[in-house]
Image (cartoon, rainbow, N blue to C red; front, side):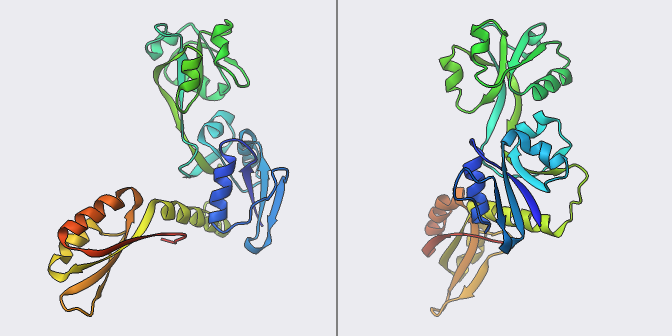
Length: 282
């Protein structure tokens, strides 16, 4: 039975559960459930603190897990990213009082407060910057006001909380993070159960990113239409009863669908339809 770690709370929890449900797996009905067995899919889910998931996976007690890239790297655990999931995106950055820090070199000799000591210490070392790092569990914005540090390093989504604290972003980003699937470093990458799980999630990612587009076009304009809708491999072409017309079916990116529909209409296509994709295998 495949044993999978899932975030039990926070910004990772809800989207992870939704994606697993879309992939055909049972999910817990109450937030107090810590373990859920899905016998139909031969999977057991363990709902854990996101920050602890990399540790459990690296121990080999659990086969794979879903957590944040930032939490994986900060843990220092022997676990590796195998699939980015496209949600819970955030940027990890330094911040300080306006006018005090312009570039990373200005951090030299200062103290940086953060909840991600592992990431920050490694980043400073990689950049050759000699600065102190102090660990705080959350609410790091107040560290500067209280004199604990001159700089903070934290996850930035909109920057609103930094501005409210009278701080501004300083220097280049430390890390671009998002939800990821992880496994123990050195684990068998070809295990059939793990591969099936990854294929299902990849199918959800594709289904969310594409729509199926159908339209009718005159045969003499077919090549131009196909150039607009090449699909993943090639579109499906079917002759229509009306001579000189063909029907085309192709997958297109959701973000480009409206523009492509406009271009097809200008080319002479009619009966242009888009439908959502609920699941797929590529």
